[in-house]
Image (cartoon, rainbow, N blue to C red):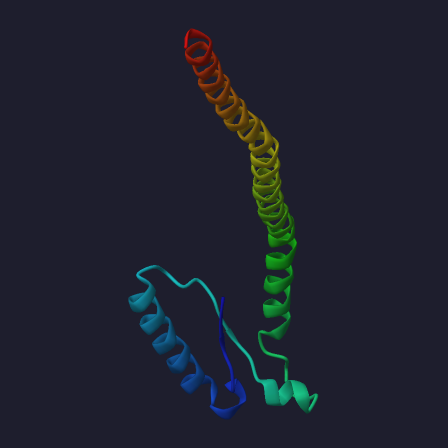
Length: 131
């Protein structure tokens, strides 16, 4: 959507020339057609004078954009929130899983140490009884 402001500062021929020039520059830079350039005058609107030019068309186009974009914006925001919540839940689950496994690993280490001590004691007893 493109707006050419200060349309009240030139005569209709100059405005047509300025709009055509703006269209050519935009189309060249964007590498695509520019269907509409809204010609407006903020000064006329502030001072409540003039024809309004393309203001009503601009407002209608903006409203159509809002109406068409609203559901997409809401859907995209919901998807971002869902992804953020899913990532957070996965982090929490991973942390809790790690916390639950930690005591099991500690118990396994303690049991391995006890098994080693038991084997040493048994070996020492066998040696002591044999002497």
